[in-house]
Image (cartoon, rainbow, N blue to C red):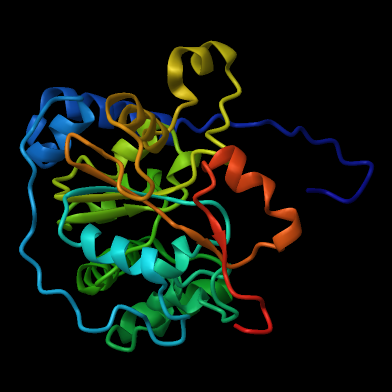
Length: 303
């Protein structure tokens, strides 16, 4: 932006429809190709009755992750059961350890810098492609490359990105970014959506219509839902998240049981112990929003 007041300029907001195009494409894919996701998850999303499926998995002897607190009883129960099921819901208020349970290495979860995990940072640290590093350095120094060098740089970058993504055990991205062309050739069998109550149903679908076999939704339906500015779309149901819809369907169809709610074999788990709560100020919320099922954890001094 020019700093000289004598220079006139115009600012224009450019509409980017990428996210909406991807959501529309996900809905179209789900309609036209029922095999874009496992049959179990497809029928569950459609509200159909379907027989229960359990995966045969060898449970790890130790569930707690290095450098993170030990899991409490409700967390351990959720982890063990989620590993065996194709579709699970994990719900709980702030401070009950949902993120700890998922071993999330985010800035909010850990006091360490995790920027080195980003794809662009991994590319810079990739020692196997000296030519790519040389072209990257040249581009940073002079600002642009020749047409031949630019084409070579783009090809090398795409190859290196695919190599890094294909070798990764876990790929972290937004729901919309799951439709990125760089992930199109990578088979993703398991998807975990954190803070899923803040995402609309089409947003979540973007991440699962590429052959996903296991889906885990994490969040709290009593907290902030999707922000929909269009009142007409909100009234039509776009403001409801997939987790919220699934959660309330469970309550409507079955008697409510703390921590073991089940609708058509879809497992719902509630984190039962809050580790952030200030006891005197947290007596109201569990009784109003969570039927009194949330308890306070040990005092900070004890932890």
